[in-house]
Length: 319
Length: 283
Image (cartoon, rainbow over all chains, first blue to last red; front, side, top):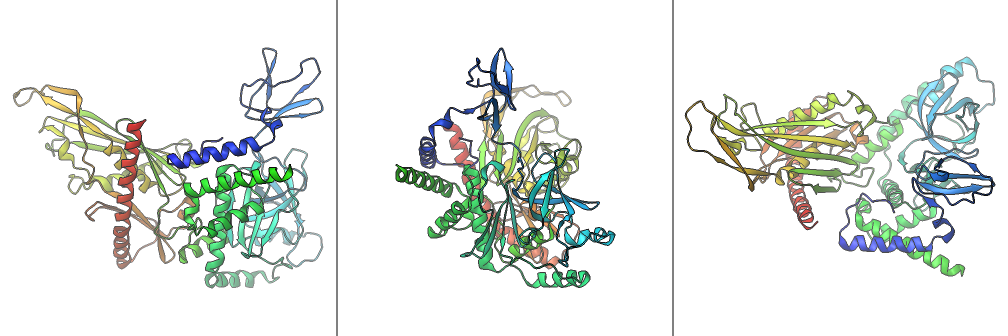
């Protein structure tokens, strides 16, 4: 698999190798033929008419891959889906982005895509909650809603005619994210699922798995009804409150544990979903591993072994 | 460097105040250090996502007229554009100069060479005529905060892996002529690195100090002090960065904290360097 940046001593290296081989053998056989690296020939029936898609090229009459990835076939189209590519948005995806620019009637967000995503002012709920037409005054007060470098959670609404993405944040669960940390992992590790917002009750933490690889781990915030109308008082109050109210230590420990669990899973290249994260975090606390030691080589090897066991149990159960 | 929102900054400050940073470390805990030594005088150090390489080259040269009994040591750092987008083109030059000057101050002592962490009088061959010139080059491949500490450790590792060839001087020559020197290909003198200091950077965020800041935490600093301390606990150099002023009592406090941290760091670094060299001999 990918070269890990961790230094492993001899025994750890052997254990990790064994666990990864086990996982390899458990994955479905059909896919192992489909993965290609650059300059591999793609097995195609040349008698049938087929269309050459992204990531392929014609070399000396043969179809050759130009990226490392998995061969996908859709009807007559043959293309190679690269694994380490940037995020590819789909309508309805939940993404977490960072505001890079406050422009006329819109915000531009960075979402690990080839272009910045656009969040229109009209796609955002107004602070007073009333559905009304956005006036010039609203446009001037855009900064009071989101500023540069704010972390925002939104949903992909549609694609613009030039290929860029439009977002919307109309529901109560979307909006600015504070009191936590943002983690960046590879987008292909977050698979589409029914739930991307997770409220981990036993920890009291919000976990948002953005499909673009931005993961938010933070204190739980109740779905807000709308911010306080009085803008001036709000900013004064909030700075005073913030000086006094740091996140309580226990919740902070939980946040760090979950964040480190995400980091470990992404280093090992496993799909990141909420159950696996919770399991990894509980594994570390049950073994009394110090939060910082979760990023050490020993814990990585343990997680890999655990995952190999879990998957072999699952396949045994299926049979 | 990506900016941080107000909420995230507040979270980081809260973590530092409560002694639990974003990756679970305590305030005075270093990230795991990984040392790799290469052939003859080069080393690579990884500190979390910070990745630096140091290499040492030696050339025969003439000692300066002011200090005829000492060799010359020059330290230069280059920030590769791959480290961060802002280093592209000439963007990294300011940081490179800052790091080079800070390293020189911490490791080489004053202009006269006194108080130097690396002893230049061991580099002289014939007083006034021939000496070794050491060129130490640092390269920053990836930057995630705390470059100075990483470079200091890399230089220490590289020097411990450096062998200076033995030089045979031809028989006595008259005053102005350059003596003949024979550089031995087989015999090497290992550089004595037990006296080389390590650099500990203490960053002040709010009311607390942290060691080994990541680049996120570094965006919050009010001021930082880098102290180079050797094995005996003596300070070989001191640099202060950052615009905020510091009360002298705080500086003294930070120095004592740095001394305490440096003991563990020196031990850890020495064991890692020994392990890396053992690994290298095997392979």
